[in-house]
Figure 1 (cartoon, rainbow, N blue to C red):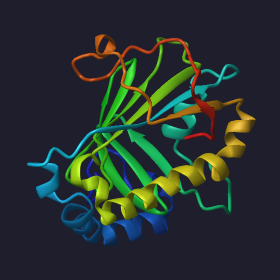
Figure 2 (figure 1 turned 90 degrees about the vertical axis):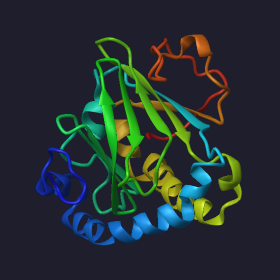
Figure 3 (figure 1 turned 30 degrees about the vertical axis):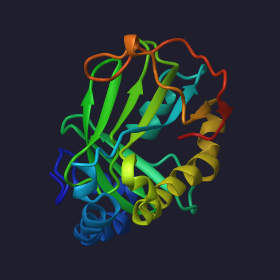
Length: 233
């Protein structure tokens, strides 16, 4: 159980994916990051009484016809990074299925979220140690064999937090890590594995009839109409 995040992976496993400097610096800075997040970027008095979210911000579609489960098994589940050597990763993640945790690093700073998994979807949700929280992230895939999947992002930034400069500063920090990962650091991995992706920014709301009780949805065949070609997040 890696301090302070919990889960079933070890500090060594985290270091193999994120590097030892990232692990050590993140342990030291986590208390400060939580204070900044809870008091300034996502203050509790905005999240509670003033209904601070969620906003359906992004939807990605990923396709990898040549290699089954290529993206999730290597980029998400893989023990080592898929990003370019000697290049800042920007964003990286590691799934801890046994411990139910989702680890991710933004510009070398690790945070942890909770992860609920079935054969057809992963739901990533924040916990009290998430300093850059989301309302929920839904990673949805078809039944095996898996050659494509989609990811839906919902962020708690509605209401007054839309004009909170501290929220925008933290969101820019995290968002720039995603963009760098997609355009730069992970582009070679995607090219080598035949992975393509498409982005819909501020997508229209999903059909309520397709949403399940846990807010996930059954994966449907790819439809990239209205989406733009993008990187590899």
